[in-house]
Length: 216
Image: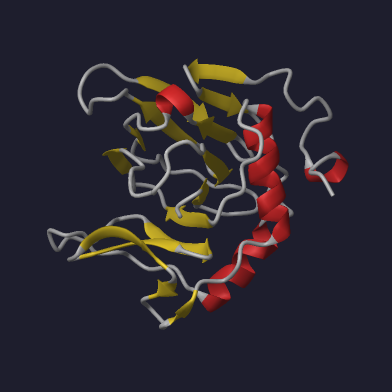
């Protein structure tokens, strides 16, 4: 079952897609997040959100969890993927089929057919939190794209390039927007500016970001 009809916000899926930089595509309003909301609640009932620790001993302001055969984690040992949730010692919940379909269809719409993620990082933002410039480079194979789904309050996403410094390109992301990046932009530095105070009808004063990867 594809994500069409009641699963989409608009009938014309790709007419308003936008290229942010080579290999990076914005698909505005691609997902009806009302269908994703209860799925996330089920996942988090098994693997709750947590503030992960960095190698330097700081705790990230954004809360995270995962689903998939492996999940992205961080602690004093550094960044890596693990097949076990360190919070409860159990395997991460599987990626639900609807989330697989969203990721695969978004990737196909952006020129990356055949994408089948094995990991989905769930990030939870509140007003005042942010995500500094970083690369997604802990995966074993960079030929697969990253598919990033935004839900809840708006956020300003920015992308730099292969280096951390220099000028950036910014775009405001709203509920249901999807950013897909691969190919030339797969290892570009990117991040999220500090969120402004806001409230969403369904998600309240929260932003959720689902980031699908092929980690193994």
